[in-house]
Figure 1: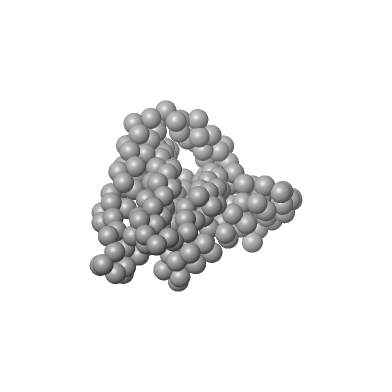
Figure 2: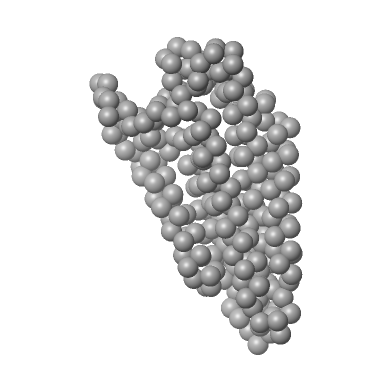
Length: 220
């Protein structure tokens, strides 16, 4: 590791690579919920009258496409200031700086993970519907409730992915213009704020929740 004053450089990677990896991870996290719902329906007894697998997947895909298409339409305008900031750092310092201690680091994806946490808490609270004698009706209500929340997550994922693709495209244009690869340098100031700690806790919670849903097959 390199050190420069109070700043400690953690790693330096290509901007496009960092963004693509983050977008793939975001997409996978966003669609764990719908996959588990469809799997729950698949393994449930055929005697129960439950929604079709498509009814819990298609609404999620629809909202994802809406978010993606919307962000692709407005993405160039919405990301113009961010791209200009990256370009200025690229030209003046040779790298795009990203403070690993900040909640706003990693190109704002920590904020998206925070949104995941909020939606997950609301889902766990609102969709915790007790089973009654009408098991089919209770399960249908649970699946429908979770589908709504998964659709909200998919909408956010679609918007962020569209914006991320615009940043990647404009970054490629800057690289062609300057004939230099845009690099992002992650660094730490070792000044952990409460927001930074909250961001790390959020990321741990989300990953833990995803594994919990996978290994318990989504059972409550």
